[in-house]
Image (tube, rainbow, N blue to C red; front, top):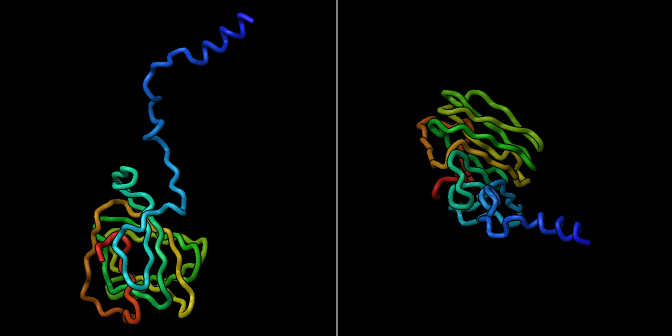
Length: 168
């Protein structure tokens, strides 16, 4: 019996110890149903922040989801020194980029899109009737956008796709 008691005692060697390091500021799981809709909203888009400074103290990245309505497009812009990664969950995305937006590529569910710093680009929901659902990851929390005076190949109409971390 005594050995059982001793063993039990060892499980609680230091009952007065403070919380173990990292317990509350280590790895976080942010459930998909608890994303923060409290970011700037735009007609035609549903944006939710998952990882940002306000929610988890992230210093160098921003991540969230974005739902882009059919036919929504951005104007020509770039994001300064920021890098972006877009992961397509559903729908069809078309990207245009270059000095005159002369290059184009399309991405579907499961595809990743990488947008390097300073590259002029335009994002387009290439479907006339399906919502485009994406996960967006940014290399910084700063909402940098530089709108460019380039005539877009596909003129924004119907709904403007505004970038998720920008204030409207």
